[in-house]
Amino acid sequence: MRILIVEDDAVLADGLLVGLRLCGFTPDHVGDLADARAALATAEFEAMILDVMLPDGLGLDLLREMRAAQSTLPVLLLTARDRVRDRVEGLDLGADDYLGKPFDLEELAARLRAMLRRRGGRGTAGLSWNGLSVDPATLSGQQDGRAVSFSRREFAVLQALLEHPGHILSRGTLEDRLYGWQDEIESNAVEVHVHNLRAKLGRGFIETVRGLGYRVAQGEGAPSRSG
Image 1 (cartoon, rainbow, N blue to C red):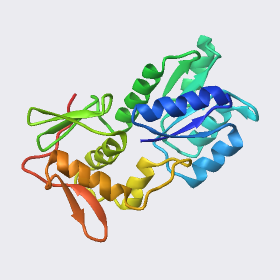
Image 2 (spheres, helix red, strand yellow; image 1 turned 120 degrees about the horizontal axis):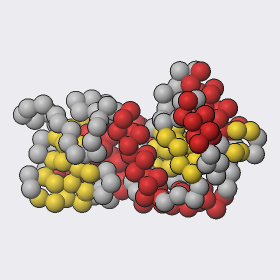
Image 3 (cartoon, helix red, strand yellow; image 1 turned 30 degrees about the vertical axis):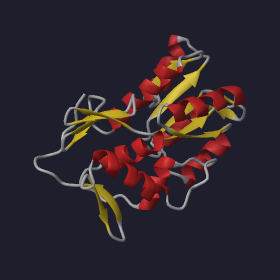
């Protein structure tokens, strides 16, 4: 899941980049509103962590602009301003959540996952398909009673496919889930991760649609989503 971090504190931003990668996210970072606007105009993100106090203005101004433009991107406000009035203002402007500094990284990651679940219309954390259930919080799963573990990038590919059952996702779409701006994209990374997933889940679990991309194979019964 690709996340945009808008935070001017370089030390905090570096900690968020490292910590969120370990939690299975693909984070990118900018330090001011101007760069945030440019990032949103040129790349696709699934959520944003937005600091309220930035060098060139208030994060709330960017939030106001986004909602006026009908953007539904989930936004978590991150700020040292922790008065009730400040929280109410941010939420009323369209923020999806609010976290005061200092904060616990695990809580931040959990709040991001909750925001993304709500956006996807899911009330619980897990995703299930054809005998496989996975948990984004642990990057692991169960397949027909057998425990399965995944690397961060294997899970990113698998989660993208499970979130769009029946849809074909192109190599480029999957690469966007795997890599941030600072990452070097390996030429055959998606193919390698799909190969590894098939080794763990069975060769027929993921289908290759020649010339188009990949999708989870349609099995018996409808897809399910579980906690």
